[in-house]
Length: 424
Image 1 (cartoon, rainbow, N blue to C red):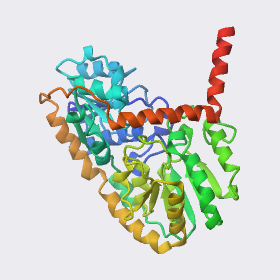
Image 2 (tube, rainbow, N blue to C red; image 1 turned 90 degrees about the vertical axis):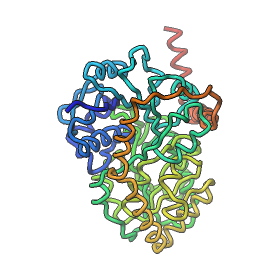
Image 3 (cartoon, rainbow, N blue to C red; image 1 turned 90 degrees about the horizontal axis):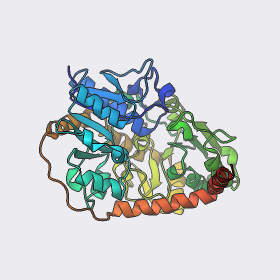
Image 4 (cartoon, helix red, strand yellow; image 1 turned 135 degrees about the horizontal axis):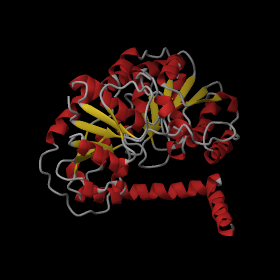
């Protein structure tokens, strides 16, 4: 059958990790956005027939276990040309790429759907609002959708929650909570907050010196070719920040960096753990959903994070499936209470398991089909842009990123590199 929709995603930095993997067993250890592009194509084809959805990417795979056609495009605009040549009327792209679209290529035969895995900047909101070729902006959680209400492009917004494979959920076994162990799952970048977690752990170890923290992830989640620091856990500059906090721990031996792993490796390890932690950073608009929160909930783990009024308000139900707190002290107190109270683990964990079931593919994938049916409708252009709360918070996050450059020493390295170029 001819494809109704195509999804374009760049996968050249994850090719080796994705070869011959079974997507139904969970994320194999790549970025959540990359995984969800693949999983959604696979789920649409299994639900509506092989060939319903086409994957377009910038790498040739030897053996990618994906049903349906796979097209090759060097870049986004090449993907638009591919769709026109193959009669595909709808193209889904990461919303972060909207600035790169050559809209002269987008005639009436092509509709663009922006999939907002990241919070849109003010500029991207304006482009999305004013471009007739952009028919929809798909938010990845209800919380993200609510936060978009004051943006100029809100009239084009809908939300389809990110989801888990049905098989992953069915195979996930609830922890027995027998060990005083906590797990973090995510990438190791400043905006994901592992250094914040280690700082919080200083408070935890004073009350629970025997507790252990396992950190699954790395800088190479998004790019397998990235240069790592001497400890092999993050890029050299972020590793420097992590090491600074590690030196302040009384029991650094209780922190275990496990590297970037897939769920076939993570699942068996956490079968006795008491809780999961996701992104406790102070970046206000980095999380739009956080798939790892739902993945760990499927294993019955209570989930703890920082409350930033972001996508985590969809994936974590405060005091029902885990906790969302604003301060380091309160986050630490919640983790300590979970470590010291296995009965609490059982209560929150069972609630979390039920919550996670709402996010299986069967409950969400059909919404994509309904959206595709509407892409041919004429859409009114949105109102004139104004500065939204999301845009303001992203500006604050940008300032935090600049401060990180100086804390990590990366700013000095960049300056030295520029000076050397001028002298050569």
